[in-house]
Length: 93
Image 1 (cartoon, one colour):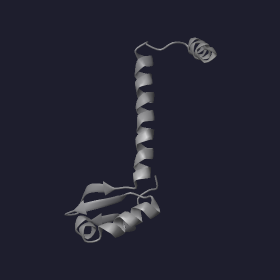
Image 2 (cartoon, rainbow, N blue to C red):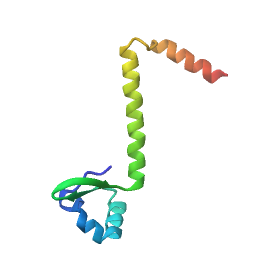
Image 3 (cartoon, rainbow, N blue to C red):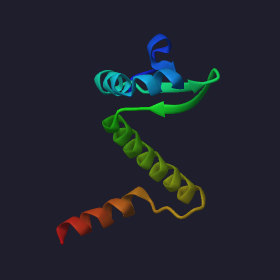
Image 4 (cartoon, one colour):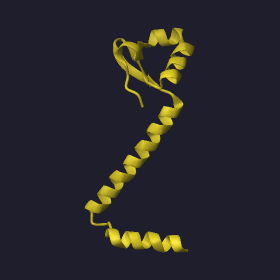
C-alpha cells in the first residue's frame, strides 16, 4: 500500500459528501488510502478494494506467524527435521 500524502489524502468529510465519485476515482488511481476528517480529527479511511484485500492477506499471514511463535514459546512446536520429514511424507502420498 502506498503511503498517505498529507496534502492530497487527508480531506474533510464534508468535501467527501460533496464529491464522492471524485474521491473514489482518486483512491482507485493512486492506490493510496484517503483519511476523512470531521472537526479536524480522522474518522474514516477510504481505500481501494484491491489494496484492502492485500492488506487483509498480509494481516492473516502475520496472525499465523504470531500464533506459531506463541505455540513455540509454549513448547508446542516440533524440531525442524521432524516437520520436514512429515511434510515430505505427506508429499509422497
